[in-house]
Image 1: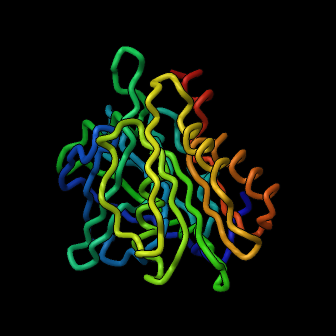
Image 2: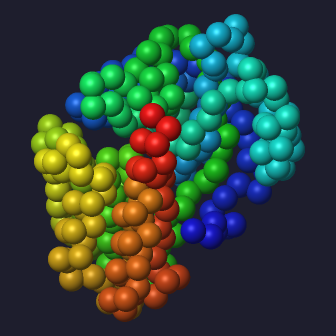
Amino acid sequence: MAKTPRLMPQNPRMFRAEVVRTERVTPSLHRVTVTGADLADFPWMGYDHWFRLFMQLPHQDALRLPEFSGARWWQPYLAIPTAERPHYSNYTVAAFRPETAEMDIEFVVHRTPDGELEGRAAIWACGARAGDALALLDQGVMFDCPEDASEVLLVADESGMPAATGILRSLPRDTVGRLIQEVPTPDDRRDLDAPAGIAVTWVVREDPHAVPGSVALAELRGHTPPDATGYAFVVGEQSLATKGRRHLHRAGLPKDRITFSGFWRHEARHANA
């Protein structure tokens, strides 16, 4: 989707940090807690505040980062030799504690049909140890609910759960609406800090071969969508985001009242596995 400039930092800053601790919080989510002197200045905005996470390669003694100014980081990043270029992925702030400069980041634990971990970020997270170096490039928020929205609809698969969780926690307490949250297993469900007027619908993807997001999409199609004065936020696997947006727009919700983003693509990930 088109980015909203007013919600993004004009001069995004790189924040260096290191791992403090890690834990498995649900069968499908692994949490890494990080800290560092830089994070004391992190301008946390709540909601789905996201960043680009740069991870040190296994063979490296030190994390090498691109040198850049303003928002032009991509070309300097590509200029780093492949053998030294850090891996990066996009993630949401799961929680931030400014008083201790600690941030929680939650990673979806992907596995192959044989049960092996897959995905460079998940492998890094599950193997992370205290002291491991990383860096965060601040990117702001995507959630852009109009002030006159009559209701809010959130739809996400497990990759979008940290964003949905952060949005619910940040919403005004008189907000009304619904969250449709898909998870791989029943044990991935957890307590959410949601306004009393937000109905939370958990949908479990019982078929291990089903495309992530497909169950949430089916639930969305059976749900009465917001009227033209509502707002929707649909994120996760690419098909959920694009098909969810198409469904909502056809149902009468204006495009400028729908934020959607494909965090990842199922076919592409498995084609490279």
